[in-house]
Amino acid sequence: MNNKLERKYGLFTAICMVVGIVIGSGVFFKAQTILTKTGGNMPLGILAWIIGGGIMLVCLLTFSFMGQKYERVNGLVDYAEATVGSKYGYYMGWFSATIYFPGMTSALVWLSARYTLEFITSAVPGFPMAIPAAEGGCIFGPEVMALSLFYLCMIYGLNALSPKLAGKMQTTTTVIKMIPLALMAVVGLIVGLTSGMLQENFVTMAQTAEVSASPLFAAVCATAFAYEGWIIATSINSEIKDSRKNLPKALVLGGLIIVMVYLFYYIGVAGGATNQELIDSGATVAFTNIFGGFLGNILNLFIAISCLGTTNGLMLGCTRCMYSLAERKEGPKPEMYSQVDKVTNMPNNSAIFALIVTGAWFLYFYASNLAGIWSGPFVFDSTELPIITIYLMYLPMLIQWMRKEKEQPVLRRFVFPALALCGSLFMIVASIFSHRMACFWYLIVFAVIMLIGGLLQGSGKDAGKQTQ
Image (cartoon, rainbow, N blue to C red; front, side):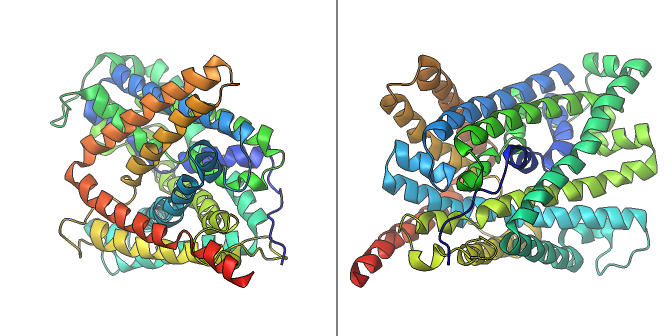
C-alpha cells in the first residue's frame, strides 16, 4: 500500500470546501435569530454580522500565515505542533478525531434528513409518516432517523471509495446552495427598494419578548455558529496542489465570499418581508412573498442540499483525522491507521474509525438533544459546545506564533494574531454566556476523552520500538 496521500485538489475545490462547510443551514435562519435578539433592529443586526465576520477573517488571515510556513499532513494539527509542540499537536488531532468533527457531522446528517422530509411533506401534504410532520415527525420521527443514517453511510462511502468524486460533490453543492442566497440577495434588494419595504425595515422596530439586555453581544453570539467550520479545510492540506500558496488563498477568498454572502442575503431577506414577519415566521416568508408558495417550499430542498454539502466537507476532514496522528506514529495502532489504499488513495482504516465515532455522537445527539430519552447533567449541545474548546485551543497557538516568529513583519506577527486572540476570547465568552452550566458538564466529557487520548498517545511509538 502507498502510505502517502496524493495532491488531487485544486484551488477552486479548496475554496468550495471553505465556503461549503461554513455556509450550511444556519445562514437561512440566523436572520430570524438576530432580528429577535435585537428586537428587529436591522442596522444593529448588520453590525453583528460584520463583527462576527471580522472575527472569522482575522482568524483566517492568521492561520493562512501559518499555512504558508508550516505544511505536513493536517493543517490544524501541523500548526499546533509547530507553534506549541508535538504533544499539543497530538491533543489537537485527538480532539478533532473524537469530538469536533464527528460531533458536528452527526448533527448535519440529521439536518440534511430533516429538511429533505420537510420539502417532501410540504410538496405532498398526505405523505405517510409514522409521526405526522405537524407533530414533529420531520424532527425526531423514525423516517428522519433512518434517512439520517442513510446520508451518513452514503457520504462516508463517497469519501472512502472516491475522494475525487467527494471533492466534486463539494464544488457542486456549494454552487447549488449559492443559488437561493444569490437570488434573495439580488431580487430581495430590488423588490425591497422598489416597494419601500427595505427602507421601512431599517427604521421600524418589531414586537418581541426576547430582546436581549445586551442586544449587540447576543446577536454576535448568534453569528458564531454560522461562521464556524472554516478551519476544517486545513485537514486536506497535504492533498491540495501547491498548498503553501493555494490553502492560504482558499481560506482568505473563501472567508471574504462568506461574509459578503451573509450580509447581502440578510439585507435581501429584509426586502421581502417586514421585520415582524421575519421574527414570527423566519426567512421562508420572504421567499414565499417574493417567489410564491411553490418556490418558497423549494427553499427546504436547497437547505437539504446545503446541509449535505456541509456534511460532505466535514466528513472529508473527519476521515483523515486518525491518519494525521498515525503518520506521526502517535495514538493507537499507527501502523494500521496510516495505511492508504493504493486504488482509492484514501486512509480507509482512518475513515472507518471516523464512521464509528460519528455514529456514537449521532446516538448521543438523538437521545439527548432530539428525543429527550437521556436526561440529567450530561445533556449538552454536541454541535455548539466544541466551539468553546476549538477557540480555547487556538489561544496558545496564537501566543506562541507571536513569541516565536521573529522574522515575520509586524502585521503578520502581532497585529492579526492579536486580533484573532481577542476574537477567540470573545467566542469563548459568548459560548459560556449562551450555554452556562452545560459548558461545565461538557468540559467533564471533554476532559475524560482527552485523558483517554493521553493514555493512548505513546502506544504507537512504544509498539514501533518493540518491533525494531
